Image 1 (tube, rainbow, N blue to C red):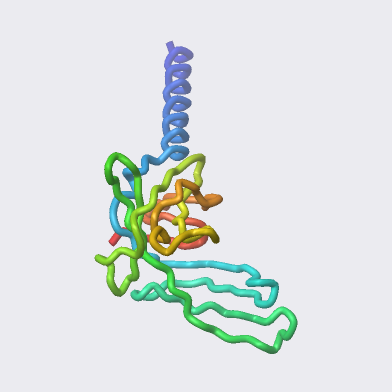
Image 2 (cartoon, helix red, strand yellow; image 1 turned 135 degrees about the horizontal axis):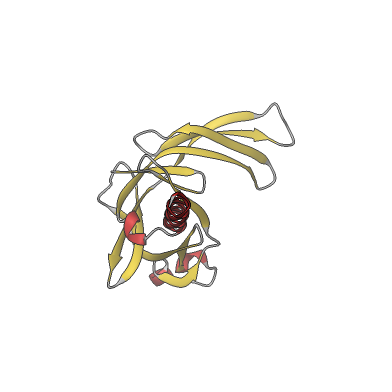
Length: 172
């Protein structure tokens, strides 16, 4: 009977592990519903081949963080300037998952029109507005294009926060 109990426990532990793994792999878009504010950012990239840009730290209550810009051709040229990271609101509208962005100073006012989003394989894909394309008339700049960006990794953290790329968000 001991061997049978051990096999049962092994099967239960294996099943529980599979359930946990499946739960970590797929997160419902409903888990994103609501308003989210940026709380931390860590970025490191080269801008237009001329400046190395980096920041790593908390985002202030207005959505700003200081970005250090260092000239690639003239290493003695360095300066810091604030960059603005917008908040994000995820919700459902007419049966579709949509998002809008907002400035932290005016969290109830959206920037632009709602655009669609989708999550697949640990990536968040956001619809691009028509204004992202060169041949766009001014009347439809903010309309959805039906085309999505290249995606950004999304991960859900144990403390109820989540990361999109290198920016951490917290529910408001």
